[in-house]
Length: 78
Image: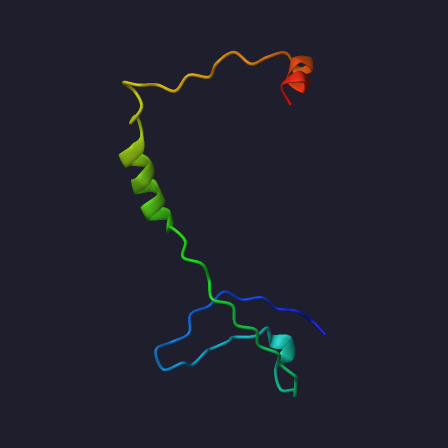
C-alpha cells in the first residue's frame, strides 16, 4: 500500500480528476478517498500587498522592548 497526498480542486459539478503515477496504469487498485476542506489561506500576492501596505506603519511610534531581568531573577517573579 502506498499513500499519495494531493491538493486539488473539486469542480462545480462535484467531479474530482486525479492523474496517478504511471506505475498504477492498467491494473485494478483499491482507492480510499479522504476529503478535508482546506483552510482559507492568504495567497502570495495578497500577502505581499499586505506587507507593502503595513510596512513602516510604526515609524512614528516605534515599539520598544524594555530591559529584561537577569535570568535568575525571573524565577522570583513566577
